[in-house]
Length: 395
Length: 134
Image 1 (cartoon, chains in turn purple, blue):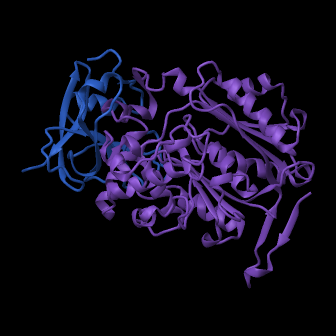
Image 2: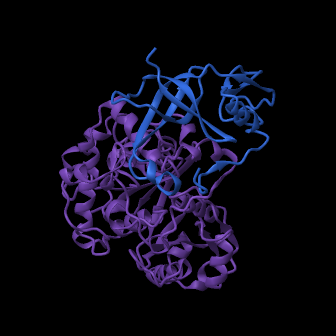
Image 3: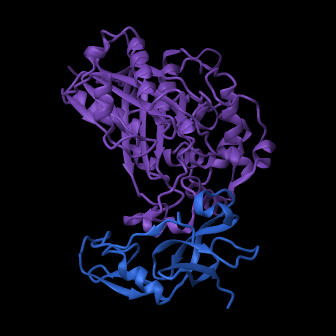
């Protein structure tokens, strides 16, 4: 059954907010450094905790969504391990934004009446494995036009975008560092965060170069960790113990695979995914209370804020200046400490959804954004390749 | 050459490109229908979906679209740092990844560059670029 409620406040344009499906359960697994855990254990731990959080059981799950590079067909291995034979399965892998896409797909499936409860999971042991930089000596298909030049991926690709942003708009390294410093302040209020020591803008600028103009502290962490999100139809959500966090809008796209082929290094797919999510949700940018943006690198945040229309193209550096996104600032962003300071197990997008849900439920303790009703989550994957944006809201 | 160097695996899209480089020539594709140059090589035009593509030799000149100075690298590249990887916009209108070599301190986005051929192995030549000071 689909619930539609109209919002008469929106003048002549009739906007209908969508209450088709909600996030009803979220959880992380152990995070950080988990040398005795497998990716399956991390996902099982997170899935069990997220279902407990929702007040639902494994037997309620009839759709499976996951993404990862740990086997050739992750959905098959994961579902078998969890003892689930789903009605619906989706292994969309577009990098770190996969989970925002999964959420959109889950809502579409629920809207179509194909299933009632979807489980989205992710897990990685990349920090323990120490194998992420092992390169194949064979460069096949379209990789062969880039890999021989030795660009470290992904950081080098983001550095190319950052260098052009600085050239075109005069963005400074100090402005990029603002993001890292503000995000660390949020991490100090999250006991699960991996890096909690305070840092200054000068600390970021003094950290070693990785790929100019990006310093070490412009880059996300490399951690282990897993997460799970339970999505329910309105009917199933009514059985859940937690306050539903409705999925009001979703948009996704991918614009390229290799960085050479990005149409414009300064305009990400968030322009498209964000516009569609806002249109679908029928809300305005200034109504959003809390924002969770994929922060693989500080430049990712600037580009995403611009593409989403929170500021004009080129204005991202000025927008984040003066610790505007820090606790107490006027634009609360990446409130769990982000990929920069909380955790980043390879693909981070699921953790954006977990934090946004907790903020909208008012569960965030010292880092709670007061009276948060509407949240925007925007994931970026690959080398600025994919973007998926969702807008979430509570009753 | 390091045994772990990521060597291109030639296929029927890429072979004319790599074989041209061995002769110190830069070849790119051109769509006979929509008259656009195309890089990387493929079997169908990404602009108009025509499969009537021909090869043309590039003049090997362009401008720096962006670049980075790599300080932390892995595997076979770890010992080479720092080095400059760039995206170059060829005058024909396509963009490609490359190295900028012989770099003085005044490297800048928008600077004109010209191709130079780096013979890394008997069977592998890469198209690098240098600043065009002429």
